[in-house]
Image 1 (tube, rainbow, N blue to C red):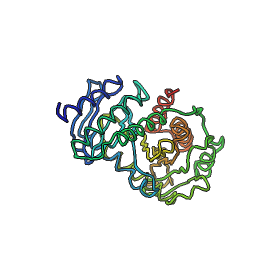
Image 2: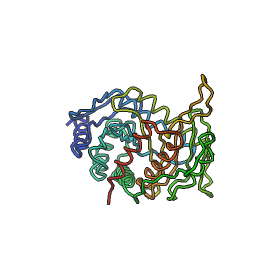
Image 3: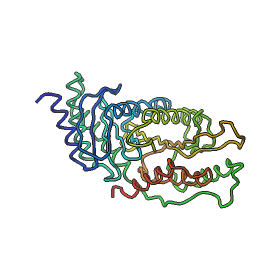
Image 4: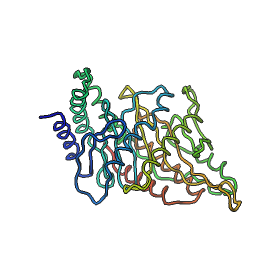
Length: 332
């Protein structure tokens, strides 16, 4: 069996493991396709755009991880209206799983980890990587297993609104501050609201962390990554980008994650004929020790509360619906 045939065999194993998986692709870090396999679906998929999104998904958070001295990124989850792209770096390649999370969620971590073991081994042989020892392969597959498993577990967060009962739309910042202060679970190391220019509207940080990059720089970098992903997905048949999450770390028991998602549009003034509306993004840095369920649950509550002040819009409503689907399933 050739190396390429062997790669297709393991991609097929990932595809067959779940009826919700629509396409499995392997590309290089620039998005050039190496191998792919998929199944028939009502959702139209553009393989070229998927590989471009895979390359963006892994490069988008690189600056923040470098600044935070947290390496290496293990996996990213890019949620769209219809599917989630799960992207994993394997040596010089990127594996992307296109998965319909409305049909089934979460993925089977054991099956995926087993495929990662053999894919890394074969890709290492293909690219002449000498470090394909059993311990190295096991460590890599265990990281993937832990990231998938931890992201799909944790304590449920009740869907509630943190919006103050009486708020003034002419000056929303004090009420946004109240919302950010209302998080009920200590899951975020830092979180903020930021506009595309990089301006941080409001932010919170757990004291004593002493992270090597300011929260303002972190928020701006994370939002740049999110905007890059949005640009790559513009006009896509899989819908608009709802949420981008990246998981990084060396120790499976001490992973970190970055979450970025839209939080509505803020109107800065009522002057006619001026460009006075800015898209706002929610950005958070979290420890995966608590699992992914409370992270996305609290993110939903914040975004829902902010939308009650800014005014509801389709993108944030679709995000809330998607998170409700994700939190309805989890590992026991």
